[in-house]
Image (tube, rainbow, N blue to C red; front, top):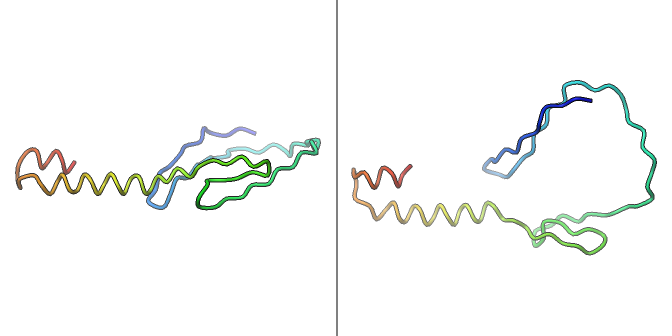
Length: 90
């Protein structure tokens, strides 16, 4: 099976991973390992597995909103039609 490299895309509602599979030759046969793990996905933690390990939720949207709020306050303090305002707006 050949595929192009994947890419991570950031949209307003979250991050997405994109892959493009060009050609599929057949089904791989795998031997079962006998190990099973359960994942629980919820808000306080990004995920919790059946062994009790947790990964904190990165909260990218909240961080971005906080930064945008701070930058908008800085923009509102600049004089209109100044070069500083134009660079702050960018």
